[in-house]
Amino acid sequence: MEEKRKHPRKVVHPDIAFLAANGERVEAVCRDISLGGAFVETDRPAPFNATVTVFLKLPGFDREIAVKSTVRWTKQDGMGVQFGLMGARETHALVSLISP
Image (cartoon, rainbow, N blue to C red; front, side, top):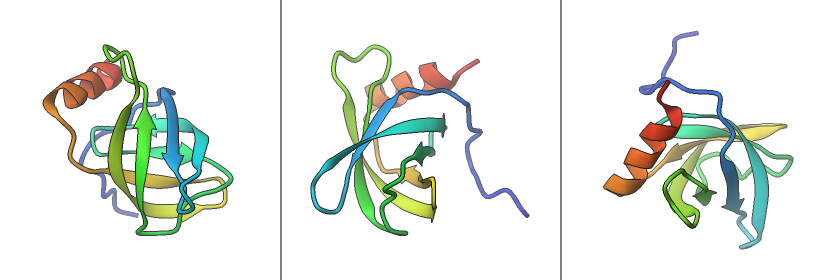
């Protein structure tokens, strides 16, 4: 199968959560992350193509950041999300997190 990712993934586990369709906050586990998105391990994945707000705790931020994201795939144990636009500080913090 051809790799479709634009950004390499790194196995790191920042705190992550998302808003479910009913508005409930769902705590989850980040299994891997890149500049473009993340694998969110959860037993309550959002539906394919849903827009969700993902909350990440990144280095250099006192509070978590909220990133509008799109669900690109789902499976029983989680979902892949593609991040929407982030600000320069947030992008820099994410680069710092995933850099070797």
